[in-house]
Length: 407
Image 1 (tube, helix red, strand yellow):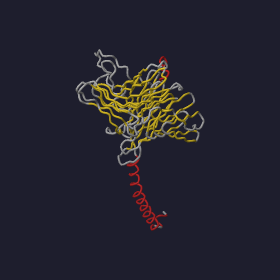
Image 2 (cartoon, helix red, strand yellow):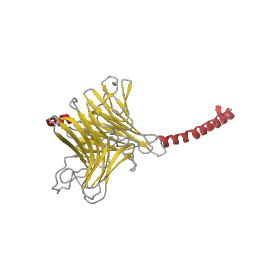
Image 3 (cartoon, rainbow, N blue to C red):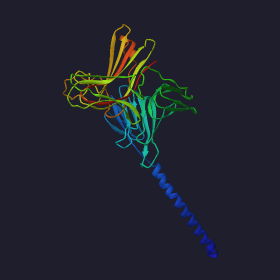
Image 4 (cartoon, rainbow, N blue to C red):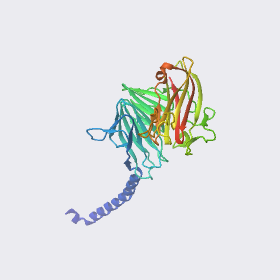
């Protein structure tokens, strides 16, 4: 055998191989362990709740869907579907109960969304962001994103026409025919299609047709509300209102931060059963007869309410909006919208709530129908004011990104 004829050469070969293997393991093992520590991920589940009607969740590989009314997990590979009577709220948490939701996705009627990937770093030492990948097959979604603590979040959504990456903020995406429209309510969105990327910033809208590059950003609408994102002091754009009985203490209005959001909080916890109203009001005083569309939108978060439903007369909610206007006949009128989470007891004889039910403790985006169409019998000619307030006994709620968009 050759190795017997030259044992020194074999010895050197073994020695060098052992040395190189030792060096390789000395470098590779720590690097591999470091990469695993910094970049290993674990799946995080999305919680699905139907906010109207009954939504459906198709689990990965399932032959039949599961009907959803209350909370249900949707893992990676799931599809959430709504029909013409259903809406769904999809909440993705960081896994740390102390952190706010990383992203909420509101799925509107006749829509289908795939949760393709939802991953968080396995270890706290990692600086990687949480990664959420979604695919909107049809319909409309409203997406909000925010970082949790020092960890960022990267939300990516695809449609048949485009690929969209979101920064922290609130966005509206709708598929109409062979076109995708992306509207940024706050924050940047990068829209990529046909090798071209366009950024939509706050208040801008971008349209993408099949096989085409994104169009240039255009104003999404004219917002008639000033400082609706509460980035500066409430005054002078907003004034505070408070109503209560003689000698009774009203609730409080305070600007605050919730994660990265600038918010206004309404709170009262005196447990004295006293009816009161507290909120903020902005005088608009704008003629709107030249517009075709007028929609009011806001984000809200309900934390507590002592009066269930909408109260005895369905007029007390932890968040309410009063849209004050003068119609084309010169009459001053109001349109109201309330929000609640606490249902009336089954045996209650109180008026059934006519507001919109929202989830507890989760940011919820609301956009009204076209008010010029909704109120066509008494069509608004002039907008007098917008008031956002809490009404009831005790409550704790927050609002953000109030807008009155006219086109």
